[in-house]
Length: 248
Image (cartoon, rainbow, N blue to C red; front, top):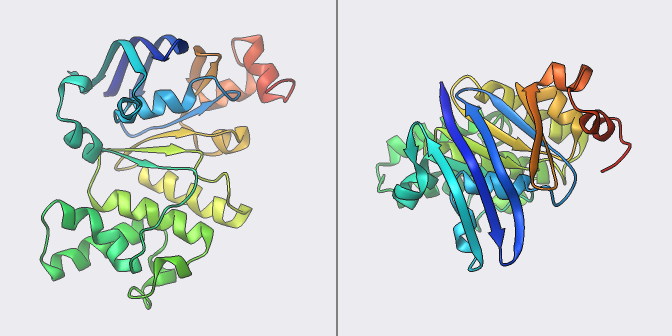
């Protein structure tokens, strides 16, 4: 099933054209890895899927972005962002306890029952591969967690509001290899119940977790295919050169 259908998408910030007529689909329950050099439009595409680009005053777009057949620009923006959560490059826990960080979104949406919140928080922390590490200190400050734990806490906070899609914008860029592996393990498990889109500058990470991989270059989609094919026999020479480190 197609979760997102993006057609002829052009995006400008001021006079700069960042995406130049993008056509791409995101399938349900896949991890779509997006790779490419800096300034290729990867994050702009990601932020379009939950309408964060609109927060920029000089943003302009043409084309359509449909989510399950509905134009997301015509839907309620808060509803879109509840369905399409985002995890950023740097973890940004709230100045609250571990428990309250995860429960924050549900409380904002009106859930007040403590027993219900406890169930949601535990489930989200388990899905983010963090529960076993924090279950005995849920009242402690989130700032006492390591960087990798904070990032998984942010994933849990996103999961707690029960989105359908999770966008990851270089979520492991500041993490050590062990923390990175735990985040990747969480992604692979989450694919069963969610649709994931991962922007990463780490081509090895894209190869490890991606169901499919898309290669962006200077605002264009060069190619998209099953990850194994992209990394063993890409159709475009530029993809092969980027993956092999000849440019980027």
